[in-house]
Amino acid sequence: MVLNAKGGSGKTTLATNIASHYALRQKSVALVDLDPQGCSTDWLAARPETRPVIHGVAGWEGHARVPRSTDVVVMDAPAAVHGSALNDLVRRAETLVVPVLPSPIDLRAAHRFIEELLRLGKINRRQLRVATVINRAREHSPGRFALEEYLRSLKLPDGHKLPFVAALRASQNYLKAAERGLGIFEIAPSAVVHDVELWQPLTRWLNSKASQPR
Image 1 (cartoon, rainbow, N blue to C red):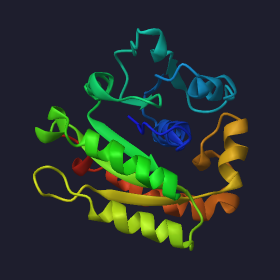
Image 2 (tube, rainbow, N blue to C red):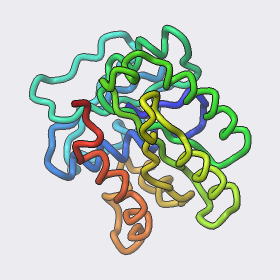
Image 3 (cartoon, rainbow, N blue to C red):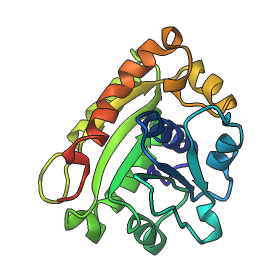
Image 4 (cartoon, helix red, strand yellow):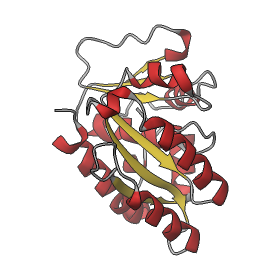
C-alpha cells in the first residue's frame, strides 16, 4: 500500500510504477484504487493492450476483490485518512510505502502522520513493514537533504530504524509515462536511465524479506 494522509505526495505515481514494475517481471498484478478520485483507474484506462496486463480494482466502491491468481496487490490509498479509518486501512496491507515531498509543509505533515502511524497496533506487533520514500525531489536542493536527514532519524516503536529506502527526483518522464498508462520502466531506456537507477533501492527493498512481515 502506498499511503500518506497528505494530499499531493505522489501516491498514485508510486503505486502505478510499482504495479508496472511487477507486471514487467511477469507477475500477476492487481492495482486497487482506494481513492474516490480514481487516478490509478484513469491510468489503467490509458494503458495500451500491448503492455503487460494489470488488473484494476475500484476499491473505493467498497469491494476490493482481486483474482485468486494474483501474485502482487498494489493499493493506492486516499488522502486525509486518520484515526480508526487509518487503522482499518492498514489492516489490508503487509507492506507500506510512505512518500514524502521535500517541502516544509510536507515535512511537518509527514511528522504528524508518521507519529500517528507508528502508534498503530499492527506496526507495534511487526505485522506491517513500513518504509519512507522522498518523492519529486530536486536532487541537490537543501530541502531534499534536510528531509532525508529527518527520515533517516525515525525509529520504530521497538527501537529499530524506520527504513528510508529511496529519493526519487522530480522528472517530466513520470508525466510522459502516465499520459500513456505506462510506468517509468516502460518508456525508452535511454531517456529514463537515471530515474530507473533512483528506483533501484526501492524495488530492491520491496523484493526483499525486509519488506515482508515475519
